[in-house]
Image (tube, rainbow, N blue to C red; front, side, top):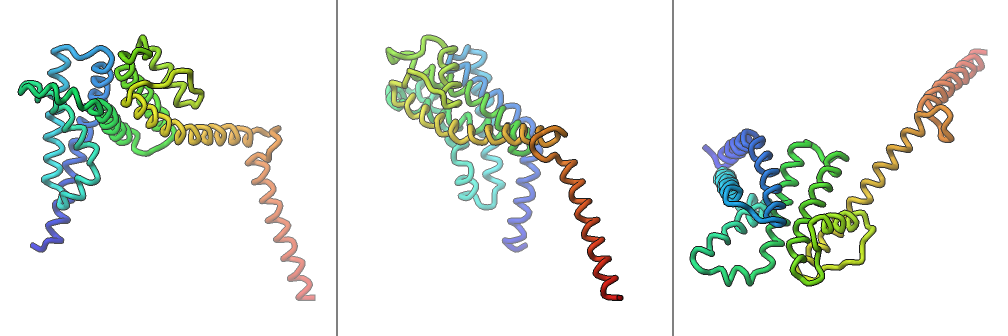
Length: 260
């Protein structure tokens, strides 16, 4: 068997495995995001901690299985590098058993990476659920980012001295940030500032899309109204028919003139 045939077979097997595991991974992706929000706001209970670790192990096994089946492993890693990071970050908790907790606490950016990578995994789950990146996908994704982003901001800023007093304040601030309204509060920590930049970029990109979609919707509704100032679709269709009749009449006159 040639290398090309082997590559085709492994790609086919990889697609079958991804399709078979798609539904459970989508469900676990949403659960993973909810657990992240709970952890950032209140912390995880022992039971939730066990559930989180179990899901993490399942994600690792899923990733390793797909990596083994992928014919081009470097390309697969390059395409899923953020997913790989999201699987490495939870492992840092285990280092506390070996008394390296002081080193872990010094890496403050770990929490930020975990927030971004976990949201990225949930985006993949949501995209697979919606099947296409339509308006509903953007709205649901925006809501998820607001809740997850607010949880991250609350966790980063609550001990900064000028931070959020409650998760509700962080939620309101994040919603205002994404709608470009802003507020008087600005993050004090490096993690909070970095997350604020990412949220601002997302809000800037998605706000224009939502505005354009809503504008197209209302313009389309106006076009369907008979009394609308713009020409309705029925009027345009009628005008097209009249033009076709006029064109046929002109062609008939030309034929008669030629015969005459």
